[in-house]
Image 1 (tube, rainbow, N blue to C red):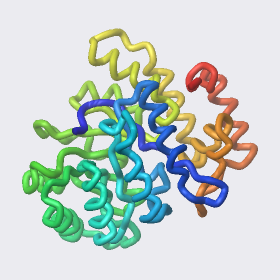
Image 2 (cartoon, one colour):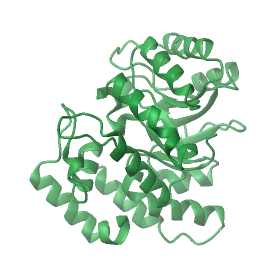
Image 3 (tube, rainbow, N blue to C red):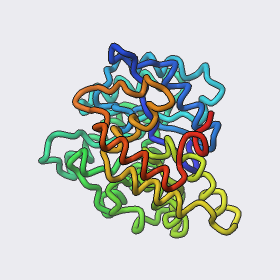
Image 4 (cartoon, rainbow, N blue to C red):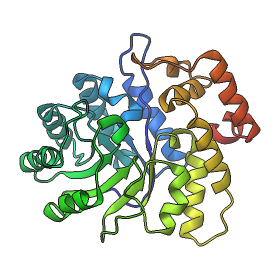
Length: 294
């Protein structure tokens, strides 16, 4: 069961044939959890979910129960098709995963609240025991959850709609629902969110800022002076200057060359941009030796 905390939208590791490397993907997730995260979400947008096949996703899900950290693993779906979502959800629930990060179908710019409501209604009708974290990311899906619409979903399905990842940032300061988990999608908003009642964050850059983010979370929980928040925000803002997936893979590839592999149309940063990113991070005293040593 998901709870308050700091979570990463974890990276997917590919082999040289652009196929999901299941063992390496799980190993990366285990590593960043062991270094501070409360958990990870596989197959969010950061994990190239929209580009990875159903068969590869199922293969990874089938291996997750063998990990000692299986209770810290959660799943995105990343499918536009209602039936693909249902197929993947039902398959995953056979392995006792019941909490899913689900974005409304992307591509169709005419998404309406009635249509999106029907999308979630049909999922819940088909899988009554599902727990859903709504994924509010207008830039990718073309749909923005408004506060009143989110409240309608939660009031209609209070046992199923249990939280929201807010990457559009129009909700996390406004939604106050008892026992509802609100996660900004940016760790630079982690502390502010905690101060106003949010539950933590689910972030792409937590793949590399996990130690800092956990320190911020723990210092808040224990009412201690914040010692890492300023650096956390600066590192996040540095990555924000680039495509996040490209920047993360370019950075992580310094430690593991498999992170150089991306599915088109995604690419690594251009050489000059990578050098610029690394220089900026070094000026913040943020590098593998000091922050990401395994």
